[in-house]
Length: 62
Ligand code: F3S
Image (cartoon, rainbow, N blue to C red):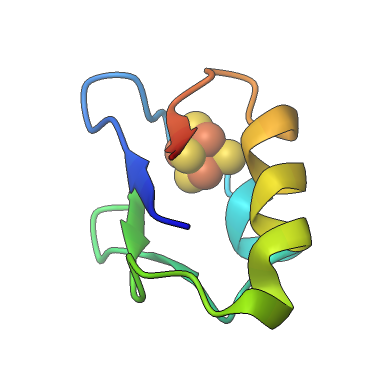
């Protein structure tokens, strides 16, 4: 599974980083960064949750 964050949509709410800090991080300017675009199997559920919970719908999983 792969995950991306749409930089144009992200508003830095940080839900993703709270739900799955192993995959998401916040940049110095406060927007989401994907640390591991190829999501390890053990984090897939958390990444799907993050995508569902992002208020800006900025997270895409494929
Ligand atoms: Fe950005 Fe959504 Fe995460 S707005 S910081 S991708 S919860």
